[in-house]
Image 1 (cartoon, rainbow over the protein chains, first blue to last red):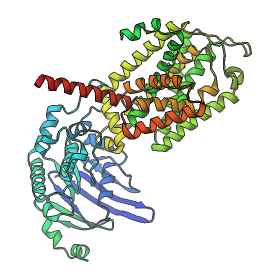
Image 2: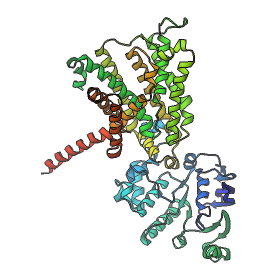
Image 3: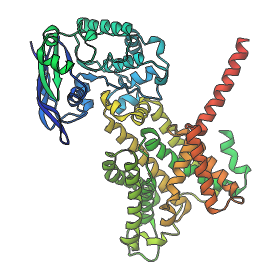
Image 4: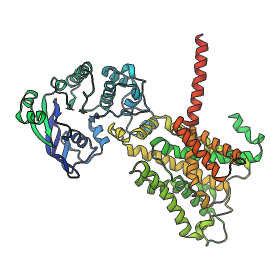
Length: 243
Length: 312
């Protein structure tokens, strides 16, 4: 198996607070990795560093064997990494369709002037249909429920044709039915299109049918790693979660 | 269109002159809108770009008495050089400041304008005319009516060009940058490239406007050019007309020019400033898309009535 994504010795400090302390892990092809840990343990910071929204004080990020530590976010997206945000951030004055289309624009100005989209309208429509947003195409973000907003985030990430998607709290604030739907969708993406996911979630029940491996992070340090059952029976993990 | 073509033959010459001023303000407002209205980087220092173009073209063609002998170039060379200078100076000074956002960008742009003003007064005032400026510059065309056609022609060409650009996907990208720049970056789009493009267009338009406006006035006065009310005239015209619409700032510029002129007998000095700032504030609060938005509402209203009639 080859390492698709590799994170080496990432350290990030915010003032006196060490958000991440020498974190290393890798993601192999065909894997779905769960990332859990208490609030403020550094999960989202790790995503920010992988995407290039933040730069680490120390450590490197590799994608398909290339060092991408110094690339700006948009180039990492073009290489095939996409993410969703914990708090959905839709474009407020754009409809669902328009907002998702932004992520499908041609990367060159000339391409944009000629209206050459990377992914065309019908294709975006198909994706939105698959995600279950087809009735919301011309609605504005303030008319949407949390479940729909999370779907829009997911659509925006998927429309960039990624290889890996980092999902930050994709299940938070959703109904049980919605969680099941998204679970099903993600499973299909893994099986049919061979996408890999790293999923941050507090909802272990939603996570369990999806992930092939789970990592637990606490105070910026990896404390456990293994299959889902292994991890939840781990003494250290129990201590962190149950006090 | 027909009305606009024949207008100068019906109205008194004073009104024609007023409309010419309106057309130049519209050009400046479109330039501002291209950069600030679309990307959300609010520039307070647009006269910096306008000023560079104005001064370059004016100095190169000036036949005054007090400066040392230097080359005097014809207008068809000096105007393009002025525009190029605006673009060059803009790239040099504004681009580094595009790295800061929000009010910091606005303040830096204002500072550039002030710095240029001071430099013009202090450095080689034998060339720049110092605080008194440069009088008796050659004009491109003479008379109110030819100038009317020149100004409106420029306004139309610029308006069409920017309209084409902003109605393409470039406009969508820039609008998205205004709403959430990090999110656009996270969507795999190089926001720097988009901002650079918007800025480049804005600088070209500001350069064209500045150079032609200077030769229309046939004189250059730094106090008028760099007074703090000038950038606010531009901004308020765009805001009243509707930011991020390109056509809106044209409405806004004419509205402002004409209303201000006819209010002159009733409102004196500072009161006019107060009136139109208040108006801009009200527009921002109640109708962010300005006159453009109102025009759209009216159009939608009539098309709805028509549709209702058809369905009946």
